[in-house]
Image (tube, rainbow, N blue to C red; front, top):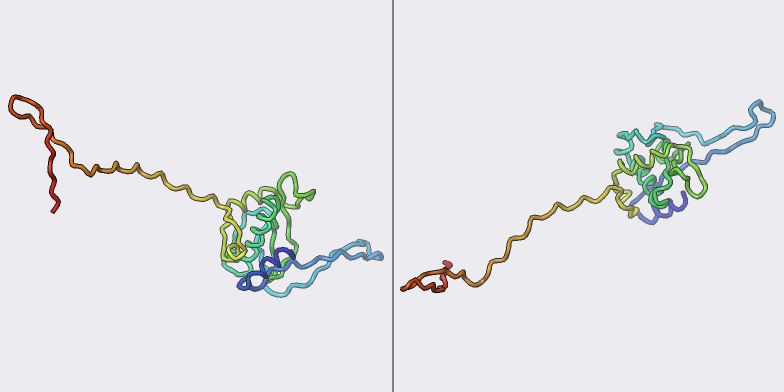
Length: 184
């Protein structure tokens, strides 16, 4: 997350930056289960900002500052990896996140295979709506640009010379005579 932190810090208005807290693997040789994980205790309202399958888009994600910043972080990772990797299962208390998941494209990303379904990447691309934090980070919209409607053919320009009127004179001969138009 250091590269993301650096990008977010370069924009003064960004404010607090989400942090994925570390999980420590500890060895307990005298225990029946010799290995365990340990992480910082998070005190406060625990919120899931996204889930592993990508189907949940909840109000806390859209309407809270932490939720919008998590969404911008997902977009940033997606863009920096050319759509090959996405941080998922984002949850925690405020700006402190824990136990995140990783989704990768089918072939993986730089030798890494994620622990979440690849469909989440496609769903994220289809459902993501940029927010103010995406804009601050200069991220490109994932939505296709709307095509301009086909314009109607332009009317033919009118000639500046008045049209000629055919008249027949004495003896049935055709004569060309200009029609004069007066504009008042």
